[in-house]
Length: 200
Image (cartoon, rainbow, N blue to C red):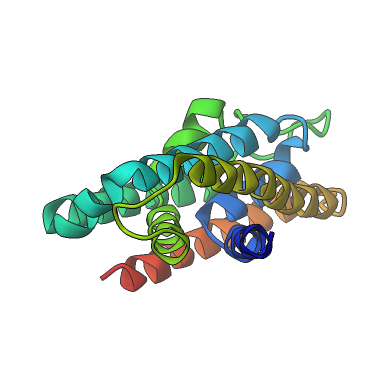
């Protein structure tokens, strides 16, 4: 029971902390509302848990021992997330009926966002190394770890989306949305740079 509590605390601290996925959830919540943010939340949760599961099955050893794969994930992820930062900063202005032009991130984009997110790989590798002995992962414990992360990750990203939704209610004019989106796009870009240097 103590181990599962430790897993839950690890999942919460790493999931609730600022990062590309959470920033994107905040922006989407502010611009499109919570319901249209759900595909991104679910996709990001599935994406992260799938990484965690694969690493737990032994892929972690492949990643850790291959500098080429590590660098490829870092650079591809950095480019993709910087592209997302640009998209966030240039979300269309609100229309006359107070709706926002453009589309919210889809389920598949949420999954891809995690698979190309250096933070997701760093956290997953850390979790597997902390809670499991290399080459001695018990499948039932891994499934429990993944289940805990699924619940906590979904809830944490939802909190960021709700924060965005709350912020969105205070943005009354088109220029307010523009300033908010540019600011969040900049923060997303900075978070990408920060995570990139952590992975070096």
